[in-house]
Length: 464
Image (tube, rainbow, N blue to C red; front, side, top):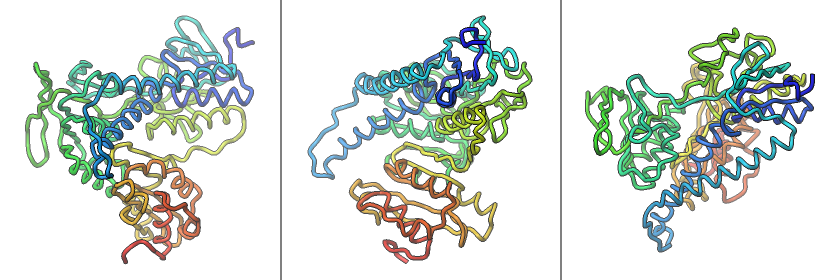
């Protein structure tokens, strides 16, 4: 049966990072591909996630540079934030990438099926009444911004991250419900733009998925920036007022209190977009809305795969992207290596940034006990970091006489260092393997080299 008859070698439901990567790689391998998408190619990451958020963060960095110019001997003033201009810049970045992706998809001969798709058979997806089949079906329907019971999002005063990206003004004050990656990034942006910001986090520390040392460093930096945060504090209720919102919270130590602000951002994580898509009805094993898949991204239904945010694990665009490539190669019979969850780099693009790969110290000690050793190299000894006027560290978690188990970094621009760090972790390198490598001077990458020198027992720019 030809593609024109609606049958494909690979039929992908969802054109976000995981879905479009799968489609591109499958087409590259000579397979016919149908790509179903109800919105725009690129999904959450390109349009209402990674890319526009990081554009805002860069605009925030520019604002901070203007505000702090005097310390570099530059005379400058920050007269304000023109959100129309900021949004125009952000949208231009998104539009350019979207056009590039659209052209790439077209050039590969991929059939884009526009509309809402539903799994209506083991290898069948129905889109607006028309059925399409695939020898293999890949579920890649992405995720949505979650809320809490009794918390009604109105898009004006009670916002999700999608609403926050479209704001046409800088709120005078904001409460951020959730101190994870999304919450800390928006708190950082709004503070740089001039807002008074309060973060409310139920867990004992900010970015609790990171190494405790990284969390503490971010908390110190946020205190210095006068970003208020209340950890171990639960949300009770919100009341919309004429001037904004009044949020009732309950702290483990402080008891119940009310915080008022112009807006409330709900940043309590993302849920899998699987409701009403027919997955469970077709026998696909599910758990709390997530699609269960093995390490080869296979569901319990033959020839049905799942990638990205709908699969339990890290909800990161680059995870879905790599899983999409993996599945395309798996379908093509190339026997690719599964994606190692621990080897996926993680970055929080706040000011300062947090970047990590591998195990945190607590997890490493749970698994390996006293065989674990750590070293922390302070960026105070790194020339480029001093030029940039940033503080932070590189922390290594390793096995004594064994490989590096984790790399954790805090500081401006450390997200750009994670590429080398993930190679070290994923190639199971020992400190002695990395220490002899020559790092260009002056760069922040030198901090990775210095940390490995220390882990190898020969620290240089460090006090003993």
